[in-house]
Length: 241
Length: 241
Image 1 (cartoon, one colour):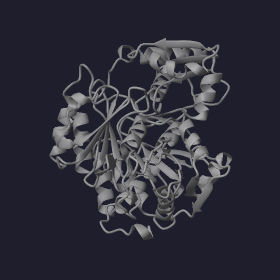
Image 2 (cartoon, rainbow over the protein chains, first blue to last red):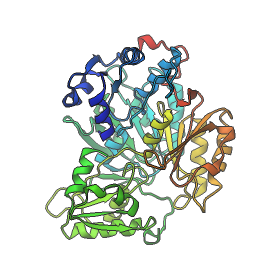
Image 3 (cartoon, rainbow over the protein chains, first blue to last red):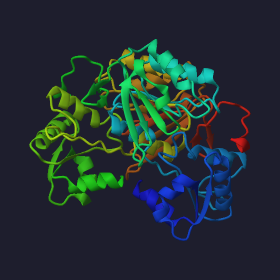
Image 4 (cartoon, one colour):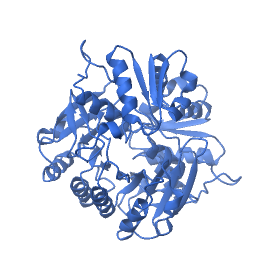
């Protein structure tokens, strides 16, 4: 958590977030009003925070990772637009500050080693708001272009086949030996890290809290660390970089 | 900067980093030995830190953003492998901890609004270690797959044509009205944010410190914020998410 995030949570009048994340900032909560709702009530949470903000309270919307990567920041602006709330720094405007954080793809990569050292794509496997053919095309293009891939939302109780479908697509472009890392709940008490090969990837090891990293054609494993080299020039001289 | 990063820099015996980044952690430096070199001396810096670490000192390698995204973490493991240094937690091993940070793509996105709310690709336009045809193919695939794109290293004094070449490729897949954001030195004193359209993107506004964000087909601008909506389903009901 950055200093700026701490500062804003500590000084806000209203704090809104999913109960689990509110618990993570509990030490910073003194007299603030807390709007805490269940996991699927994101729109509800953001709407209530927006109402409070439009009524003049300073509000902190709390989420995990980075708020701009598959998280809450976009929803704030979508709802402002929907409700014609002007955003800006004028007297009639709602002032919105997005405070960046460490996204799951960086926290997970750090635990694995250094898989994101070269070009990468982040793809959510949730087909709740995106039709599967769009997701499928992205996996195909990312595989062809030799991107390292970080899959978000690989699996949930109801969505059980998507990660295996992704694996099948990837196997037509990458070797079965391609390193794959699964990181669940990075930097939390129930953190779990699994390293395997694309050919052996067992989708059942992933859940809602897992980020799945698939290496590019050059990614290697060295002493249990997953590492993507920086370059494609086979003989680049490290000494004269 | 996270609490863990502060802690490690403050307690290390040796600190290694590019002079500019050493300055950023100056308040944490008390009696530590500092290895500070020029910008292009990355391999030199990491090698010297590794030597010190192998000789028994605890070393902190400092860089900006996230160490795992186009930065120093991978080079540590590459050099360990090259020099057959075992990495792990056993008595004969070198213990390496990668501490994640806020990458430029999150810091920049936060200043722009919420451009990374849906699937995205990070592509470096530097052809120093990667042949241009590989980069070009990635741009083409990312454009076709409708990824939001974050371009790293868009331009330097010597590399002046790559961003414009990328723009040309993108224009064959995306509308000239597609929102583009350029963020230079995010969260530093010389921070600069420019919002424009793909058709009008002036490559000369980017430099080595710039991250260039290109929206997907749904990205919109609302009150000077660049926002990518979460879904592709045109009529998804925000209320029943």
